[in-house]
Image (cartoon, rainbow, N blue to C red; front, side, top):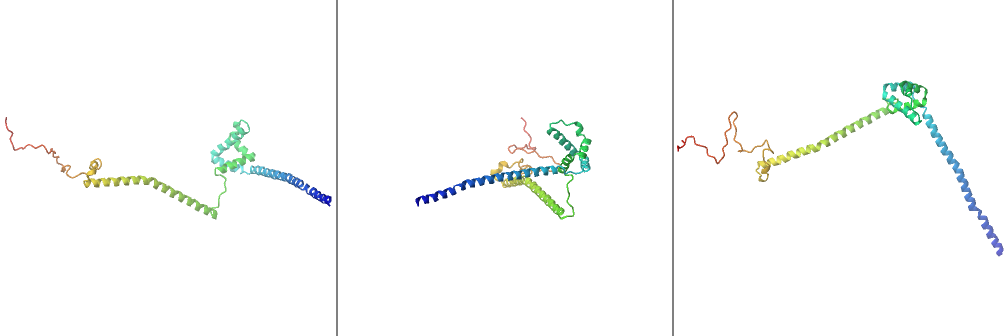
Length: 241
């Protein structure tokens, strides 16, 4: 019985021993299967991206449409010549002057669709050959309302900034006027503490009464004699020595 029991124990152990190895083998097989799938997916994504780029290179306006824009805006024509020079530089070549003439650009637009696609994107970047919204549609009305609201907000912000820039100057002016009014009131009331500031330079328009004699228009001003000097009496005859 003892040997019979050991036999069954060993049989059970041997039966369960291959399971971890089999599990590891299955995981390795799953990983090997997953790797080709991911590689295929990545390859398809790259292929689709390259295909999209290739297709977009062939989307272009007609040569006549592009030439009409270049005839109106010579700056875009110069920009297109700059692109031709950069293309030659990227290819390690010296650009030929004959390739930068206006006629050479127009001829290339007629025969090179990829160059025409580049020219199309360039003129669109500067606002040409773009689709426009029907002015009678709801989208156009909404855009008009948005533009008006933006203009109103911009105007309100500019007015607020102008008002804020002028406020400190007005406050300084008002404060200066209030300070002068207080000092003038103190001088008029005879405040002894502020008598040093009560002069003609501080208040040129204010004069204290009794400081100067009243002047009559057209008359010569009377000389002001010092108080300690006694004027000569014209009726008294001087004595002879």
